[in-house]
Length: 264
Image (tube, rainbow, N blue to C red):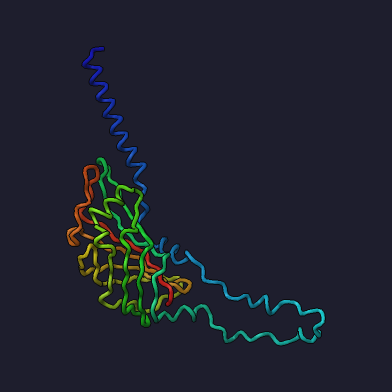
């Protein structure tokens, strides 16, 4: 075999190994979670269990002491007809609700890594805020996100996100404030999901824009859950191009969320 042919074969082998290495890197690195959906909404609403009520049954059915007169066991049963039902307790949703740490918020972007289409996603539960409801209308809502707490499956991506892209030292939080009341039409039944449109001011990297988006709301176990996503064009918020020498990122993405609220 000639020297030239050996060199050509070696170069081809290196190229094959290089391409294989790129694909292996992508397969190992690309571990972005699936987009948030109604299944995540259900899971978040059921993530915590309300404290158990005092076990009155144990107290009222315990056997009397041996010295107690037998007649004491014939006392009339306690009247429970005045106790509120679960349906009644959950139907009155008017008031202020606080965001729970069972919430999830983050970003989702389309990437091309080494010529392969993938997705990048970062998430956090460090979200605070309130929702105010009057009957079937959400009259006010706001939430604030700790941007530095958002993490993905890649430390390299997170480092770029916190420094060059979102500058979290300078802009540590992002916010949303509802500017138009949301009319749901009726208080949903337990477990029912209803949809509506929301309009408000979204602030990212110090820039505020009005946004309108669809959301899904659900009342479950005395909690309110809200699922939604907001399309983001990076240039609207003066967000630098996230692309680098290896990853090419499209010029837009999604802010996705499942927010869980507990009655204040």
